Amino acid sequence: MEPALPTGRRHRPWICLAAAAAALLIQLNPAWRDALLYDRAALARGEVWRVWTGHLVHFGWPHFVADTGLLLILGWLLAARHARFTRLALAFMPVFIGAALYWLDPAMPRYGGLSALDLGLLVYLALQGWQRNWADWFWPAVLAIYVGEIIFEIHQGGRGGGMIRFDDPSIQVATSAHLASAACALLCWLPVRFGRKQDPPR
Image 1 (cartoon, helix red, strand yellow):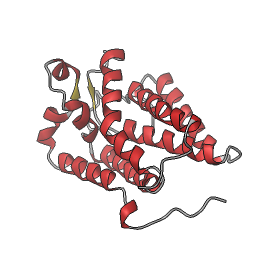
Image 2 (cartoon, rainbow, N blue to C red):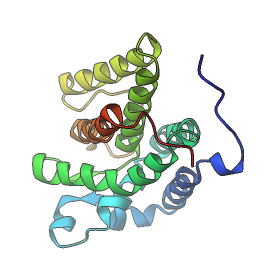
Image 3 (tube, rainbow, N blue to C red):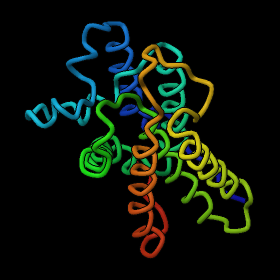
Image 4 (cartoon, helix red, strand yellow):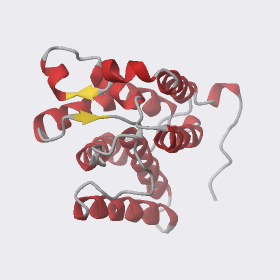
């Protein structure tokens, strides 16, 4: 049986709360969207901030609530055991995802939302949970659901991936961003798997 996770002020997911607050501010100011969205043409002109800010832009309130809500849940779950990873992931995973989209998916002109970051955090959390108890069925089930969603997205050509409706009908589910975030999480987990067991609480 695993020990209870410590709670308290020092284990609150401040970085996730800050990201959620920034996403809310952007959602309340829709005129900011075009300047902050991941936009391939704008990136080619040197507007590199979009690699980070694009993840904070959402296509409607249902999209915002789903993505930001999951980020906060994952933030609380990760705060005690993997706070360092969470901070580094929110800083550097957008770069990994943005590079993958730019170089490997030139057909994706625009991208927005926290879903790829959410799924990267979820994959890392699931891998860490499974590592603590290889006989536990819960975390493999989480990973299987994730793989199933990705397969469904690919099969639907980006039109599947859940019940969320975007406020822009031209937007598709960014399967390549989800695959990139999963790859990033796996690359972060492998040194932990074959090195130290887990991040110390911060």
